[in-house]
Amino acid sequence: MAAEPPAGPPAVTPFTVPLPRPRVLAPYRRTRSADYYAVTMRRARVEILPGLRTEVLTYNGTFPGPTIRARSGRTAVVKQINALSAPTSVHLHGGANPQDQDGGMMDLIQPGRSKTYVYANRQPGATLWTHDHAHHLESEHVYRGLSGLYLLGDEAEDALGLPSGPYEVPLILRDAHFDAAGQLLYTMDDALNRTTILVNGAPWPHLKVKARKYRFRMVNSCNLRIFVMALSDGSPIIHVGSDGGLLPAPAPSPVVVLSPGERADFVIDFSRYAPGTQVTLANMLGPGPTELVGQIMRFDVEEKVPDTSRVPDVLTTLPPLPTPTVERSFELRMDEPGTGHLAYINEKTFDHDRIDTEIAWGTTEVWTVKNTSTTVPHNFHTHLVQFRILERDGMPVYPAEAGLKDTVLLFPGQTAKLQLTFDTHRGVFPYHCHMIDHSAMGMMAQMRIS
Image (cartoon, rainbow, N blue to C red; front, side):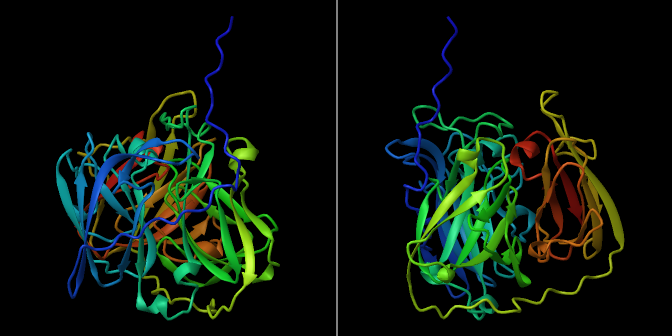
């Protein structure tokens, strides 16, 4: 008799769980110029699937981790204590920090030890996030929960009048694969089975919204899944920011496309709906059954309330593009499914003892990045610097990508041309595919800025 297939995860009826909001971490000390935080990385058992407890890796015991609300120009000092049994490294994704504060792959916090990260926050307001970056461990550590939001605000953004307070909502997306007992199952490069969609740690949640404008701060914290999202009625979503902060102007679009590590800052005006309307945020890209991965969350529209928020025609002014003096090319490739488990940048797998790119401090460069895989998408993330996307396959960029970026999506065969200026910190920093399983398989390299 053939063996019965293993039992799958318990069924969850979509849109029955309310959307949780990640807890905002309060500083334990404040001075005139800095806020001080303490975070402990530890195991915890939390309720993700209704009625079950799942063991996860956490920052301060919550899944996802708590949100740090920082301010541009004000220092955040974060003591990270490793109470886990494996080394970790905490990277502030999107932050412009010195090498020893960047949370690099080999800059490890050993079990029972701690490291204090000092973030000067000398950059515009933006939706940033923290996650583990310990080499060969980052993929499983992030999958099991080591990630959290870091919202950097500034006065210029405050003055715009965008929706704020209870009408500014973080949305941390990810997927997961559970067993019948509700425990996370992890296999490297497993895109097919991670079919439970979580938002802020809850499966297919619903959010009650007033009939007015809301601002959503979204990060794709998946290891591999790319989302192509749209409202179920096809009405527009107004992009106001991306990875590195605000866009020059609002960019209405019927879709939000977000690969792992990317962020989207957007406004939805629910005043166009009658109270009682239910609007789903759908996902139009696999892999996985449409009834599972084809939906993300639902908005339940309530009564209309006064709304003084606005989306101005001009959001920010980006600095002019300097004249580049260096051009480089990078090719991303991995072994196709079924042929191996290695991934490459310019046909090399990662070696922490090798410097792949030497850069003169203060220069501006143009990097042409191509995904040469035939079936597998990749994306490309640079530490330290925010770049501008000049073109995609020779065509102008999408309006939602017209701002500062640190991660760019590349489908098979696609090429993007990026412009980067290296004028903040000297040192050695990585660049890699942020489909984290791919970087753990070798699709990572190092640049030295000197």
